[in-house]
Image (cartoon, rainbow, N blue to C red; front, side, top):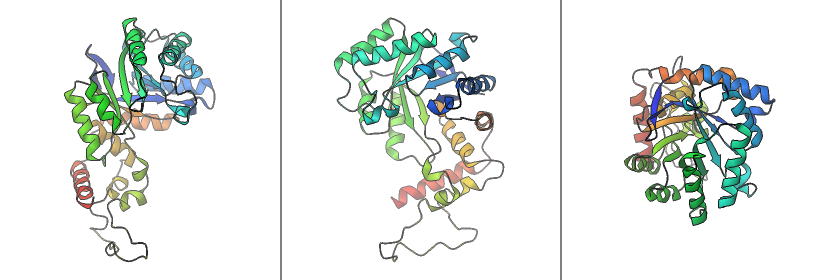
Length: 306
């Protein structure tokens, strides 16, 4: 596992962050602890709680209780999960303070290295909430503050200078708006965590081969002729992601996300040990020659087609 600097204190964070949610404890607490133990053995020292669920917080705390707390980085996401549909999404000063204190109390972690607000709307954070977040930092319960999301409002939050970390989707076919936001965050000295490195639009060979291919019109005409099979079939698409020997498409996409030096860590989800171990090996591997060029050519083709 490789490590990268995180935060102004110079803390080292693993290139991968294990994101933990309800699915990881669906088979019981022991399964969740085993997953975390395996991640520690793989060198992962960064963990994210996707919700303030007390059961999830307790399991993570139990798994990390024999590890020097200063050597692991733990983030808590606020307002995620079912909150987007109205339940549990409480960005009030009281709601945020209560969620953090409850998670800290039951986990025994002592503090959260990072508290992340999930996709806050433009007017969803009153001044009282920002004051509560500052108070949580002042008392040492939270060390850094972050925002997560992909909407245009993220540009506004990046520009405020009120947050230390940006968590954003980023993958081989990310649009220019995301890439521009990454540059802005880097120039603002924000640390960057990325997720959705292997989007649904590329997760099968058929989908990847269809990217940037002309589409048929409503009546089945127009949009160009159907591409012929052969050496140049699907040129300018991401079909090669599923055709590289000894490299699963997901591993290629993860390796690509790690090529950006501004990225502190990539969030992964791995509810089984086989998948976890496969992903954990990626930071120590070099992408096969030529893949970076193929990715760039596919991206350029997409920009021209847009």
